[in-house]
Length: 227
Ligand SMILES: *Cc1c(COP(=O)(O)O)cnc(C)c1O
Image (cartoon, rainbow, N blue to C red):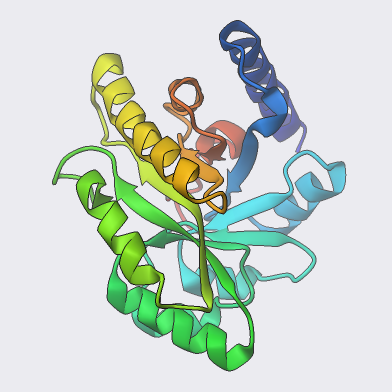
């Protein structure tokens, strides 16, 4: 745990330095713990310290096993339609909303449970190679289609940058998503969250407008090989 606190101190100080340099409000940046493969005990420790208070899980099965209603959770990994029932109403955001069929199911379950499920739309910041997400050009139309779902509220965008690209290319990817975010936000004040940046690229992401970074290895240490 000491190691995690030391990591956290360093991350926070890096973010503070960057914010000071670039005139960004440090308090506007949310540090989300990307908590796959990490024990509930570790997460509770961080929450109790008041340092990291929200955690993003990738897999519904792992989330189910770990779920504790006193913590705040997001789902940040690809979500299968048949798993929606396990997360609606239990997570703050479903951050990987990337298709209409998924939205339909989220809305159906949320309506049945009498809740409004907040979501982020996943955007593919790079090109086709990237795993999930809509291309930047398709997001506005997708949002129009989502307007029919009264039990879904879209609060922002999430993007994963392509791996192994240079710094200039990375900035281009993040900036493209940020431009879209700012445009949508100007039209709709409910759009507030721009989730971009992981261990390798969180500082670049913040520089390009991200206000939520999802940190795994740099915070918790290298991933254990076996759960
Ligand atoms: C695992 C994961 C992260 C964190 O990755 P690190 O490189 O370990 O920081 C962030 N976002 C998503 C969607 C992830 O699956």
